[in-house]
Image 1: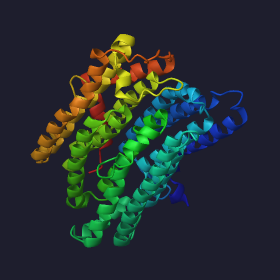
Image 2: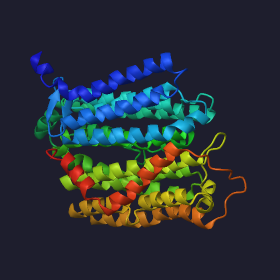
Image 3: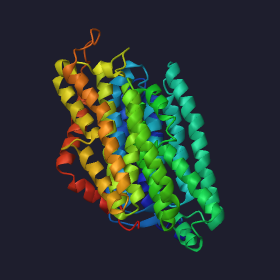
Image 4: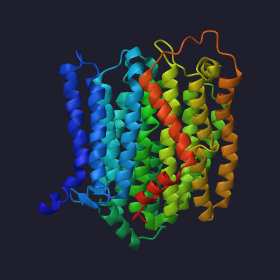
Length: 481
């Protein structure tokens, strides 16, 4: 028992979020009708408290609950950015939810439980805890997507996501069961030791990696496992889409680190080839199909597929620099997605969703500051200097070239140039087209506007000074390889 509880304090951030999620639920039940802001305020306090507790863990390493949860530099850094992503989602959310009469505490409770799932995925040291975190996140996401019960589109998106998500979870679980059967242990680091005696051509091991990578690819949104992305991104309320495109991507990247690096780095050659195929398909599908989209949420969904292809270049490299650059790209993508969907939220109003690219026509005339911020966002997504998106692409290209995959880097550069078209089209529409006759007025929202300003300018500042964030990512990869 002493060994079991020896380092239980490492689980305090997860315990804090769990307790506060229950507190938010009860507070909303008893106070929600009188104090509508109680749930979001408590959620913000939860995120701040979790960040403080995680800061106290920085520099420590160990495990809790007999290895079910582990603490290392990656755990600390990834959890901090997960809190930041959810914080931005909460700050963006208020007016949008009010206008659609879904400003209820359940949204924030589900966000906190989803965050808890991400935290368990990040710190998971066992196949059991990793899968538990994944399902906690997934079930919360299904409910969030279909939360607006009066919307048939949202309900349909939630059902599609549930069916396809259950299939992907089954893939991952089957791969884990094969890995357990082969090694006889659930602990990812014991799995790594057991695989030393297994040849990379072992048929059971090959099938295990195929199913595991397929499950991870679905959660990341990599092609050809991206079929849920466009419909779910378009159908879900935009606040929820903002969440889906941000924090869960950190959790999905954590699965790569825990399962493929902590548990299977010795078998790099076995799963690296699968990731090369995923990278090529994602780059092609994401950047080519996005060109044809007229709905900006669907365009950003296919953009996600393309970005997953770029961050996968770092994973394919299979080096510490490669994983650090992929983590850097993941964080940058999360910040870009938060800003992109945040802009859509700012332009929406009661009875109107700014979902079409044409809705951005003449934005420079109507709201010059918003147009400038959207310019930064689109330039960063396209990888135009001096934004951080350029440095993120440069980092993964350098890593994959150093690993000897020059042809992949060349393909990535070509498709980055092609992909720039659909981002620059939004800029052209904002600055060179006349506003739509029925454009209407842009509703003032000081909280969301300030959040978007900070979020967007961060993309510019981090592009000019990327060193500290990159150093943070290298710190997170210490001791993993």
